[in-house]
Amino acid sequence: MPVISVPYTFNEEDLYVDLGPVLGRRIYLKCEGFNFAGSIKLKPATEMVEAAEQAGALTPQSVLLESSSGNMGVALSMLAASKDYRFLCVTDSRCNLSTRLLMEALGAHVHVVTEPSPDGGFLGARIDYVRMLTALDDRYVWLSQYTNPGNWRAHYLRTAPAIARSFPRLDVLFVGAGTTGTLMGCARYFREWHRPVRIVAVDSVGSVTFGGAPGRRMLPGLGMSVRPPLLDESVVDEAVHVEEADSIRVCQRLARRGFLFGGSTGTVVSGAMRWLAQHDTRALTAVAIAPDLGERYLETVYQDNWVRALYGDDVLDSGQPATAASGAARSAPPVSWQGPPARHQYKEDQAGAGRTSTAGPNRPLPDSWTAGSAPVPDADDSRASQTGKGER
Image (tube, rainbow, N blue to C red; front, side):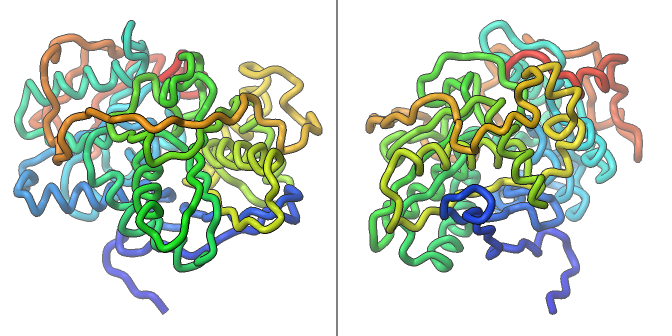
């Protein structure tokens, strides 16, 4: 019987769903949502915070700062509450309302960016705002999940070894691509393993991560509007792109069998089903990673009016098979990645910190915070969180 005193020490690592009876193809889904943060982001959040503590970057006066579309923000909110830090999450209008409320319930402050930057989308606008805050006050400590090696190292040390223990004959692993922390950690681990494992990245149509054309993306979690600094394509065998409508179809199909997962899981499973349909998989052992569960998506992925407004009536009860993911799988050619040197980037280059595309004039400074009083959102923030516009 596990007994814990702090919430981040518990994480169910060894739960898998056999999707064969539901989707007709044998694949095991690693469920990462069974912890107090509710997602796989607990692991990199813990790794980054503890590394910052060990490096002396965090003090009792520090304010944790991060840009997040949802799950990382919740994980850091939980850690901040447990470790008695203040935390400000900078998100955008596509963050689920329930996720925002959860962060605030844990004591975090949330700032919602409602306008994308012209050249970097919502992600660029969020980063602009974060840089502005770090330039204004040195008590802000930006963990920078997009560049922090602790993001991928957490999965190298925990997620991938857990899969290897459960599936010593693993042949192919499907991993969603967002910041690419999970993808890079797992890919690097299995490159060093005793047998070859094919690493298939699953990305959203509209994401530029693997060279796709930028486009509208409404589901948070996967996809990027700029190339992820952590990405090294040389350790990825293939990339599959999935339309968001297909992600929603898979989520709803799984829900009709009692499995409620988030939109990212729908994307990963949809891409995996397509890949398996195109290959001889009779002797293959395949695993996909489900980043979170579905309760935070009740007003979006599982809300008929929201789905109809964005994707049309044919997405609902369409009867389409789960293998109908759009976009062909393609090889991701090896590249020589010349990114920044690996280091904990608590403070990013602040060039251009004065430019920001945000909602309203609020610039929360630590001294302006009181217990239970977050910066006041703009009048249209709650509406925007339910009907988010643009791409990240």
